[in-house]
Image 1 (spheres, rainbow, N blue to C red):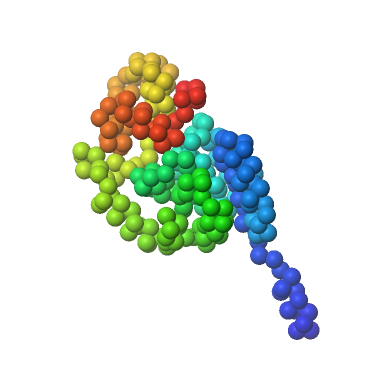
Image 2: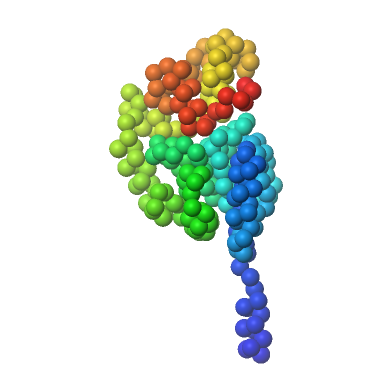
Length: 242
């Protein structure tokens, strides 16, 4: 009898970690897919090529972990991550980016990401991180942190990094809202405040108010600097139609 019970217990398999891949480059998605499908405890439940599709599939497929590119059409990866976090989706997000620096990493973690890697990350390191974030850990650089440690890391980042002239660290590193991203996208395409107001059905004064908030959050002096900031970090793509 004991032998049978033991056999039944050993036959029970640990559920696989369900992974969603989000990237607008088919070749990169295919490469990730090939790497991950070799892992017996990982299951790729879907792929998405833009921000809106990522949100939809995250809600319908209910992955455990999302591999999220920053530079996406529609909504960028930080916006998607922020929306998933706000809606309390039970999912860990690993941010992957071609533009790697500490400030971008800070934005990613504040948006709700659990880990942050450049796209040339070693596959073994990424696979290890998938397991770690599924367990509720955070992976930053070479450190694996629990939630209280991440809070301390954020405080240290605010202390060490230059912030906006207002000295408001909360605003200086807060990812832009969806409306602010809409406005900033149109600015990168050379549109005036009047044109932006007409596109979005809001007043010119409202556009100016949002622009003031954008400049303060990004700690830049003018709309051109804001556009360059967003383009360099992959938040906005010039080929996207505003």
